[in-house]
Length: 524
Image 1 (cartoon, rainbow, N blue to C red):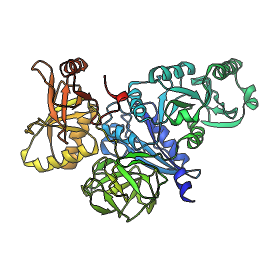
Image 2 (image 1 turned 90 degrees about the vertical axis):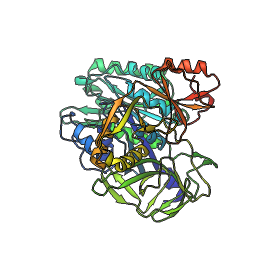
Image 3 (image 1 turned 120 degrees about the vertical axis):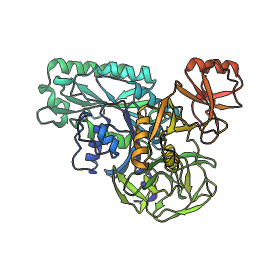
Image 4 (image 1 turned 180 degrees about the vertical axis):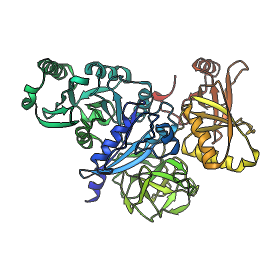
């Protein structure tokens, strides 16, 4: 396979969803089709001791939820698939946001009985900000669900993205018959008894479908063809139109059809912006960026892994690269790829691929590794937390371990740390969801031997301040702090407090991320 083919055959995507929409089940079925696993782990209720194949952290196994992103790679029909599995729990961490920065496209899983839910909205907004192509999979068609046309309308109305139905369900729940492929005019018939399906022309199955459901299908197709939008791959690539698929991940129905279409429609590895301009994947010079750091993936060895997204060139095991932030040359001797906890050494990687690097404490999120002089990739913001707490160490003799644990878990993106402007002893923590406080306490105790106490604070949002320091009155229900880079941040109780500060400080910019946005993305 020549260089251009290697680049074109890469696919890197993240899966996002609201809790319990079936994201983990869909992930495992995709791995099955790629031959990465022989059987999917049982996905059961939270009380079950069974855990998903893509969950590796002990707290995930105990609670039956995903709380950290994982990176999985598998081959399929000549393509290299890099699947970035993000937490679906409502208390996901900023790690989820950062993982989306490494994706070239996103698969949005929606429960067909519940429609668009709050978690989906949050994650979709990040995709919109980054103009990431989004593919939609409506799941659980083997259960009672809402009307498909209503679901499409809801996606367009709430998320503001145009939809195009690639296929269409015939019936739902107990009357679910299968899926009609609009592109090929074929039918996949669902066999409920064996949880298998039969493929063929729709006319070959027509006599086996109840007349009322057949009529519903014809009416829906007529409406979609007449009043619906046309499929436009340019709009898909721009993140303005979402191809929609229907199926049931738990019944393994419609998953392979989705995957077959996805690899043909999804973008190959995309360019990334840097201080030297756009870096295209076809460029032969090697470059990549760190988007995730995970400490203690193997607690017995206290290892620390930095996940690198290859942007351009060919990565080769043992190659020497420049680390942009320190200016040091480092040799990447033991690059790894992952399937949950399982890992193996890789000799080469190509644009779009994700590899794990042993991190002696050198790497931070957003760092660039490359053979291109003076290159630094840009666009790695910190997002506003929504929950805040003040933290204290219970046993001061553990201060060294406490500092190390806090630093490493902050670098992972598990939490953000703020301090008073005079850098006093007070430590304020910010997280996206309150579960992250539990994860923090658990990991500090079990991985660093440190016990902490947390006191919840009344603040609900943080804003980075650009252009000066705001004037804050004693009754403004706000607090000035600085982040780890000593950038000014104001913690606020609610949106009304923010509006009052804006009125009092009209020349300042209050940003929901540490990155200065373009004018159309600025708040207010």
